[in-house]
Image (cartoon, rainbow, N blue to C red):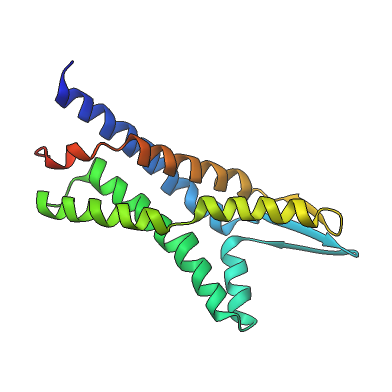
Length: 163
């Protein structure tokens, strides 16, 4: 078994999954994720639209928490994985720092937790309100899945190999 070849395969898988996640990310946050119908009123909202609505209604803390933990940190983690596995523009020392930062960010990024919260909310409110999944649900689920696959496939030993 050739060790460098395994690192290359690992980097290729990581890069492919991370690039897929970053390509799905705009659709996941911009397209309508949920269509709600209650008492004849129809409303659809995207994740980003929901954050903007929270800001408009004065719920700044909740809006900032959702923005940071569900959009900014997951995106930073995905971009760090792309840098570490594919672009390799940083020097070795900076790559190690980026990896440590990505590991810390990964603990706080909550895209997958948000998905579970959305599903729990739908189950609890299903008798009161009619819900229909919007087109962003597929992109969101795939983005979360690709992000997780990229993180699982990443081999940190590749950081110390020369790019």
